[in-house]
Amino acid sequence: MKNAAGPVTNEPCNYCLVTVTTENYVQWTLTMIYSFLTSNGWFKGDIIVVCHGLDDKIKSRFSVFPNLRFVAPSGILLEKVAELCLQIPGFAKLASLFYSLEIFNPRGYEKVLFLDSDMLVVKSVEEVFEFEEPFYASAESCWYQGNGRRTDTYESVKSFPDPGLFIENPVNSGFMVIDRQCINTPNYNGLVDLIDPGLWARRNTFHADQLVINLFFKDRIRLVDARYNFRPTNASEIFTRDHIALEDAKIIHYFRQFKPWNFLEVFELSQYNMLHIKAFQQWYNGYVGMLKYTHLQNAIHLFQENDKTGS
Image (cartoon, rainbow, N blue to C red):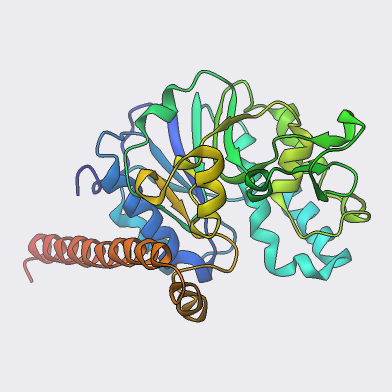
C-alpha cells in the first residue's frame, strides 16, 4: 500500500479527506480509509476523523495511517443534537450522522472530500479535487426513481406546483466535495441552527444531516453521477438514469441497513442478485486487506520499539 504509513507531517496541505466514526463503526471506518489510500496512491492530504467520546485505545488503531487527526464536533453542534435527541428520541442512535456538518466549519482547507464510513473506494478519485464548482454531491435514491423532495414535508414526489417548496435534485450526503466558498462560519452556523426539533415536526422522516444540507443548500449543489456513490440496492435505477454499472463505480456505498457486516441482509440480497454478491465480495476483500495491513504496521512498530530499547 503506497503512502499509507508514517507520522503526521508539518507540511501545509490544502485538501483533506473527512469521515465520521463511532465506537461501533471503527472497523468499517478503517476499511474505508484503507480502501481510499490503496486506490489513491497520489494522495498527500490530511485525513480527518470526526468523532465524539472515543478513548485513546480505540484512536490508536488509526495510527497506521499518515497525516490523520481527530476532530471533535463543536460544542454548539453537540448541544443542538442532544436537544433534538431529547425531544425526538428516535434520533438517539442517529446523533453521529450530524457530525458530517463539521466539514463546513473552517479549518483552512481549500477543498474537502467527505465520505461515509460505510463506503469502499475502488478506483482513484483524484479528479474530484479539481472540481470547479463550490459544492458537489450525488443524487439521493429517490432521484433515480424520477422524484424530488418537498421542502415542507420532505416527501418524495415527482413534482410540486410551487418550485420554492420543491428540491428537484436532492442529494445523498455520503459523498460530498466542497471548496472554501462553502467552508465558512455563516454556513456552518446556519446549518447547525437548522437542527431544531421543529424542523422535523411536519416531516415524517429520520433523515438527519442529509435533510439539513438539502434544505440549506437548495439548488446550490452540483450533481455528479453515481460512479462516486454507487448504491448496489439502486443498481437498476442508476443504470437507467446514469448508464452506470457496478463495474464503473469508483466508490461503492453500502447504505441504510444493507451493510456487508449485517449478514442477514447479505444473505437476503445475495439470494436473488449476483450484483450484490460481487459488491459484498469487494468489501470483504477490502476488509481483509485492512486487517493484514494494520497487523503488519503494528508488527513493524513493535519491532522498532523493541529495537530502540534493545529488548
